[in-house]
Structure formats: C-alpha cells, structure tokens
Image (cartoon, rainbow, N blue to C red; front, side, top):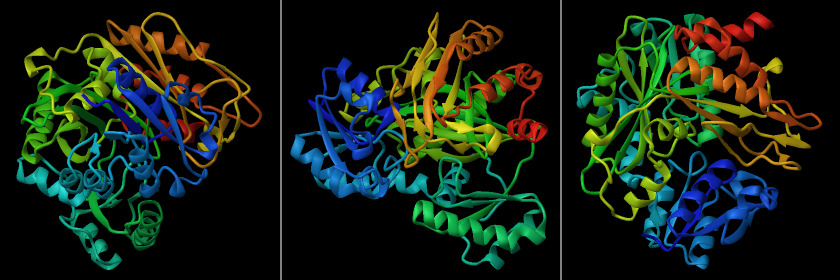
Length: 451
C-alpha cells in the first residue's frame, strides 16, 4: 500500500477520499486553491498545499502545479476524485512519467473510453447494443445534419469529449439542427477544449441505468450491481438509487453482464461506470463509460457494503480484487439525493454566497457526504454540489419515506443561498417516481408545470 496519496480535488469528494486513506493508514496530502484555504475538507489532511488562485484552470485544472505539489510533498500516488482531471488521459500519463501512480485506469483506457465515438465502437465490437448514430466525429454541420436526417428525429448532438451532462443538445426539428450543432461545438470547445461532436438517435421517455464495475491489474472484473440515474435536470443527475426499480431481474442482469463484457474487453482496472439507456419497450443501449469514481457511488456502497474508494486504492497498489462475483449481493434499497446550491425557480441557476447555518440530517441508516458547515463560502468558480444525502432501507417504500424525513431535517440558510431540497421533496412525493414510472423527462415536466 502507498505511504502517501495526494488528493487532486476539493469539496466532499476530497473529504471522502481522505477518510478511506486514513483508515488504511495512508498519509493524506491535499491541494487547495486560495478560495478553498478554509475548506472543512482540509481538516483531514496531514499536509496542505496551496496550488493557485480560485480559477480552476490555474489550480485544480493545472497539472504542473499539482505534479510539483505531489513531488515536493513526497506523494506516491495521486487520486483525482471526479471532475477536474479525473478522466484526463494526458494527466494520467504525466503522473506516470513522474513516477506517481494515477489512481484510476491506464491512460490508454481513459483515452479510448473518454472519446465517446471510440467507446461506442468498442462497445459495438464487443456485442453491446448501441443507438443509431455516427461512428466517428463529424467535421461539419452539414455532415452532421446528413446523419441526423438519415437516422430520423429526434436526435441528440453530443460532444465527443463531453461529460457531466454538458455538451449535449436535443434536436426535434430539422430546421433547428445547424444552429444547435454550431452552439454545441462552441460550448464543447469552451468547456472541454475539444469542439468535436457526433450525432445519436435520442430516446424519448428513457430510463438511465448505470453499472458499477471494479477491475484489478490481474484481469479480475466484478459488477457491483446497477444504479438508476433517471431523475435528471438538463441531463445532470439529481436522484440515484440502487437497485433499479421497476425493471426485471432478467433485464438488469443482461445490462450488468454487458458492462462486464466491455470492461473485460478493454482491460479495465479501477472503479468505473458503464452507462445505458432503456427505452419504453425494454431494449437497452450502451451510451458511455466513466473512468472514475462517480458522485453517486455511495448508493452502491450502501447496498453492497463495499468501500469503493478503498478498493480503488488497493487496486492501484497492485492488490487483486478482494471479492469475486459470487460474493456480491445487493441488500435492501439505497437512494441518494444531490443537494445543490441552485434555485430551481430560476432554471437551477447557481446561488453563490455564505452559508450562515448548516444543519444536516441524521437518524438511522442516513449518511451525509458534504463539505458544508456554518460559515462556508459557496463560490461561483466550482460545481454547486453542497451535499449528498444517502439513505438505506429494506425496501423502496421505506427508503423513500426515510429520504423524505431526512430532507425535511436538512436546514441550509445564508444570504442569497438557495438549495434544491424542496424540489427533491417534490420529486420524491410524485406518484410517477414512487411507482417507478418516471423517465428522464420527469424533472423537466415538473419544472414546466410550475412555470
């Protein structure tokens, strides 16, 4: 095992990684920007290193500063968390070139699966179903429109290097396509530094299902079940749960096996997630892979009892998987709600400010992953995620009731600061969600109904 790990992230995921490191007796080196110098996450660090200003491009997205911090502090490995540089193949390669272990899959696997068109092609070659679409990035708007016209509307334009629900546009009318394509290219270039796009058939009223896998450096691969991530706004997840409700065991079994098949085909090592859409007829399609720990990983931990961050660290250190597929058993139901500092009444606009009072919920089988505290400053420079509330119960009805109780206890206040707590309560109380009849359009329908 490593003697020291540098955590190349911030907020709740930095705190989460630090906890698993400390339980393993690993020294924690934590970087931070000037904006995060008073972050509660830093209290678990054995060593803190300020690497730059608040602007992410000059701190958390600036490899030279991160690598210098790691080497000067004597780190043996770098854990990137999620977001920022977690799926940057170049950064993973830079770590390796400096003698640092990148806690994640190899640079070649990240590069292959991070390119969505290449990932689609690898999936298809491995026998996984994929949606009709372009097998390669499209050079011009006219070329992209030709593909869209051939596969039929609605279509979705996606950034090849996209992630986190960004760099996408749904087009239902051919007359809107060229404008949407140009806007998506521009957005992708600004956000990801890569303006390439491709086109795929858009599935209306879909379910979004993802499978958590672990792979070691010795060829071992296991699935830790599926998560339902269907409740989304602007294609960014709000509520996740495991196991997926309302789907047959036969269907989820096939989806899990598809994820393992692709992971094995690419030689995946580390924690990873393979994402699928399920259409109203029950057909499923691979859409993308995430070569990192996911925001929603706690729901899998709650139903399996497996510490995924611990497993990441052990795998990166060369240990074989500590469990086999027959050892994996999903017990009960876990649900996670993301509490963001956003105003649902204003299109989920971020609401920066200072949290004056922060009172998270407690109670049986209730977990809160957060960097929130009284006096914490919520800046406009970073993601608006403030906390994740995760509950477990023997069945889904009890899990929903427990989550509603937990959210009712959660108090966040501060001048100008709004959260998504009330909107999450509305979704949990909606009959479509409670009866597992919800689709990816539920949140948008509910927002439209109150506009």
